[in-house]
Length: 256
Image 1 (cartoon, rainbow, N blue to C red):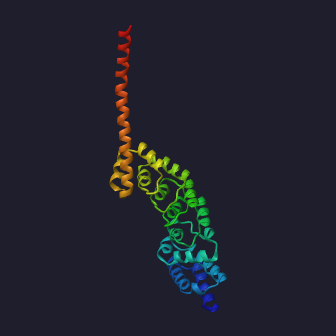
Image 2 (image 1 turned 90 degrees about the horizontal axis):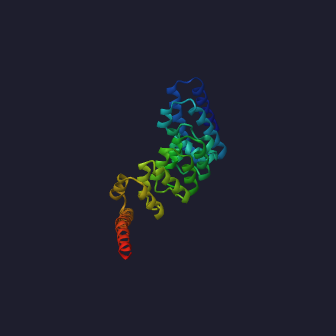
């Protein structure tokens, strides 16, 4: 890519931003994004930064549908990672930002920063990533609403620590969807699963027995059988206790 070609392209972008119609801006955005992807492997950090800046200027005046339909989103993944400024450059609209949040271009430090300050829709997008470390999972859970918590509970790659499982268990008491997802996790600790089964509804217990993996199903079945056995023993003890007390009373009166 020559300096002349880049200058000509940026001049067209400036004109589109300043005077162009939405259709022209959308067309220019697609052309500029395609041009960037074709030359990205030959750009140095300064050129990447310039490309990223121009992309943002053009995108700021483009319709959201254009951003979603063009190559803008993969460009932002690549440009942000190479220019090393992802959180500030991330688009405010979660529909546009979602592919960036799902990509490998952002590290945990950036994602933690985003999860701490962006919208619930951004949190949901992060919650669906293929890899979620313990610190990032904890941060999402700290700021998540109902939908983000549900997405996090469904994500088998999310790594929960003790407080994280406790927070999920508290949410599960109010939300059967979270309860079901928590119960189906193969990594759920035994104590957490026992507490869940003791507190959740019969509907959730039935879904866990029907829809979980064979290993989880066996765990759930064994725990439910143990719980039923303990309940039956307690009931028998409560039934025989008054009878024994009565027998003891009769025996005392006879002795007297």
